[in-house]
Amino acid sequence: MEPAAVAECIESELPEARVAVTMPRPNDTDHLAATVVSPAFEGEDLVDQHSLVYDSLEEHLTSEIHALKLTTYTPAEAPVDAPGVPE
Image (tube, rainbow, N blue to C red; front, side, top):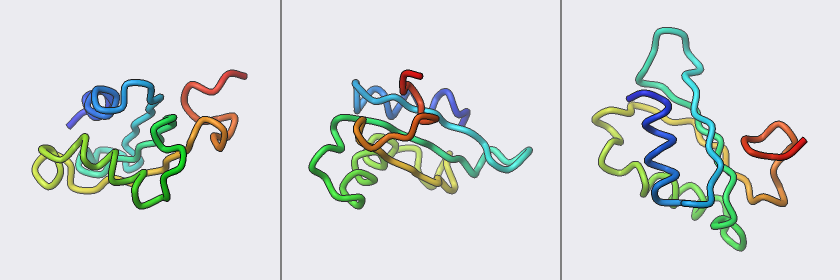
């Protein structure tokens, strides 16, 4: 599954999310890494934040996505290099 398609799935379930998806291993489309910044994560623990993202990809996990390294932030927690954070 292409990184842009993964980002679209996440953004469709978490509309205010800012998402960056990459392939950290060259020539390996089964292993992806996603950084997601969303106000939906506010007040949620890390497990629940990740569950929100995994739920958005449920139909693709194990069939089109073998592994996903996931990093989540609320807008207040996001580092300056996170997707969509103003400089």
